[in-house]
Image (cartoon, helix red, strand yellow):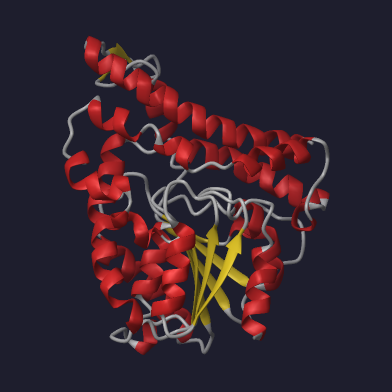
Length: 347
């Protein structure tokens, strides 16, 4: 029950804090109010409530690293390590490496898993992130192991770019799983206006992106939380050990999900848009098997349509649709991603 409450708090905090932070920043900019940091005694050029947000950012909750979530958050059950295929998880624009937390225990029981996290202030380019993943792929392939990529949202763009015909075999994944790939971003409303949007001064940029915090949700997310609050768990989270495991992840995820406006600008301009430009014209060049997982109610991206586009253009591609799932809910507890992957591999 404690783990359930943390899951509910996760959804509520991310949405409300995003909205409150954006509005308070906008009000602060308009009024010109700057405040002193009670923690350090130094003057901070941040606005009401943003100072609290800034203090949470001083903790290095998100650093650039590869990590195994079962080890990092001490899952108290046997996990798969050092043998068989290894799965590398490439995150979305949030960069936390934690958003599929409901899937991690089950994946780690069957597969060796490493997740990429990217520091919130990371000023790397799209090609820099490609190189990070390539290096990790090459490391494991040199040991004779198969490497599979799971790319969620922006991570889907990165993953597809590494599976194309021109890629070096030593750093090419053997399989790719995309989840609500952000390769469709440049064809959305926000994608079309983003070249101008990212040039907006504050508070207008923050005010313009506040709705994004709501577009990632779906109705079933709240139903799932309500079920969990009543002690109804899916099989992938039924054991007390797994519930305790996700309760350890939740605080870090809540703390690390919010991006500063300048970080978000950078990531859209230097990660997402260049990635879309590189991948979209070359989908037919993807030479490895692809599994495209998509929520049918994604309000942020046309994920269902993008998955069907992959099926048409990528030589070897299967599609799995998660009914009723939005952008953030596709990999919540309603989905057993491990079973989906196992069925796909057996085909």
